[in-house]
Image: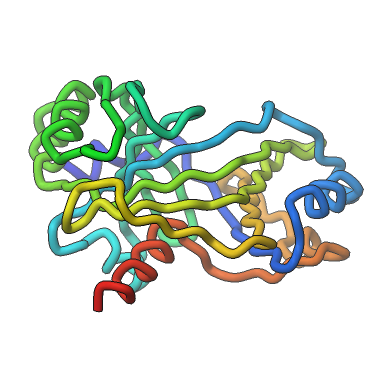
Length: 232
């Protein structure tokens, strides 16, 4: 029942690239000259995510193990990183090479230095995701918050592209306080290429002429690994 309740209505392919030693303006200029004819799809904005996991980090370990079927949970909001926010609860699902998500409007959340599990729990309980998922959500704890600046583009035939830079993360687990920062080095831009199931635009074709290196990348997993290394 849980798997069916979480299964996205729409699945799509997602390809991730990382451009190193550049600023986002350089990548944006290169993308705009790409033969796929990308244009702005939405004004750029800051994205904030509060990632949830089990106390033994089952979601993270599923990612590391490369499980074909896996899901991660986050509360997402836009704009200012702190203060009173109205996040969206998202279940990001992966089925083999396909990705998708389910979303619910969560309750208000006060994000500040003293953010705690109780406040996050109240926000989750207000999401109205149904009794089956409510039981699952009660097993989750806040693990980290990240923030980045995102540009949105779309090609002439509907391939979506996002450019993320300025990534900052804050550890919440095992002590739920916004007191530890992780700043990624400058000159690192994450590019995500997104297209519907059944389509296969060439990743190599997209890379042609761009200063990019294709690699597997998870903002949640990489930030958590950095914090775990410090705690070891």
